[in-house]
Amino acid sequence: MRSLPRSHLQVQKATLPATVPNGTRRRILETALRLFASEGFHGTSIRDVAKELELQPSALYSHFPSKEHILAELVQIGHEAHHEALRGALLNAGTEPAEQVRALVRAHTLLHAAHPQLAVVVNEEIHTLPPELSAPAMALRNQSAAFLREVIERGVAMGRFSPPHAVATAAAISAMGVRLPYWYEPAGTLDIETLADIHTELALRMLGRR
Amino acid sequence: MRSLPRSHLQVQKATLPATVPNGTRRRILETALRLFASEGFHGTSIRDVAKELELQPSALYSHFPSKEHILAELVQIGHEAHHEALRGALLNAGTEPAEQVRALVRAHTLLHAAHPQLAVVVNEEIHTLPPELSAPAMALRNQSAAFLREVIERGVAMGRFSPPHAVATAAAISAMGVRLPYWYEPAGTLDIETLADIHTELALRMLGRR
DNA sequence: GTCTATACTGAGATAGAC
DNA sequence: GTCTATCTCAGTATAGAC
Image (cartoon, rainbow over all chains, first blue to last red; front, side, top):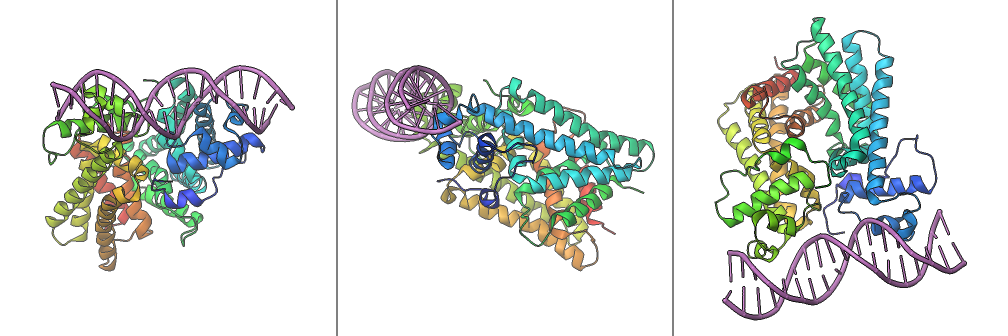
């Protein structure tokens, strides 16, 4: 390997949500995920993936019709897990805007901390997919973004929040989670529950909750 | 083009800081920057760059010894501009921690808003460089990160700031700027001066300034 | 579902004339 | 400093046997 890896992302075992069934297909996805996160999609060849799995390159084509379809599946899995986590969090959060923000930020942060490689690949490589392969994920992404936006707008309307700018503040809150895989190391001193608490506190401070 | 481009990044003229002298070398860097931002480093071929410039591929090798060296130059330019902007801002900011944070966040945000493609390429592709080519930029990056970290630590020590966690809050403040190119469109209703004000306000709220 | 073998294409880079 | 021509290799993917 000639390139400079993302150090802690590379060594970590690439974790996929439990929703993906075991078997060769899952092993392909896990291996591709780790390599895509470390070397990028275009920087990883079908041969690299096959070698890691001790398979011949041709064997992969029994499971996926193309390398792009492997990426598309990862992108879809990531977006489904994210959307499901936010939806579930909101469902159990009561009606108070501050509680809803807490639930959303907590879920957003925990997911990015638990699946850092998936987050990196999903966010950096979705643009390399042709539109027909990325469309379902993009739809989910828009819905997930709307969760936070709507909670903030409702909190503002109810007089609970006073952010300097609703859209920019929503982006800032989301950015905390999205950037997590680039600096946070789960093996360090800061555990992910504490981190989620910190992010909820930062989000509520940005929103000027009263 | 088969891939889904980052819509507004693709159409925008790729801007390089004024420090890069005019000439063929600059034109190569600008074109490579636009293509790398849209298609990724590995997704862009030397032939793509040459075609866009109406040159033969071999002509590029009179200006750069390899494709990787083009990327390395862009990464270096980006890090130098960033470091220079933060250093200059801090120099003119007085001694009050809140003023220093304001200056740093303002510079950080303005730079990411003014050079979105450069920010994207620098952050997503620096890892594809071999360590010897990325080392100078990595050194600058560490110094730039230290600016904000030290101002926050000093503010905490002086009793001016009360962030829930200094490191995580510094990361959150930085993330606002880094994620800007992925959602902010300069052509829209939110001008970059207002945006910089919003980000400084958000940063100071996160820090709990009194 | 995995293998061996290979087709085909596009990649980065170089040689040498002008 | 740019051109034409070309080398060499690695890439995705397929054919057909087991």
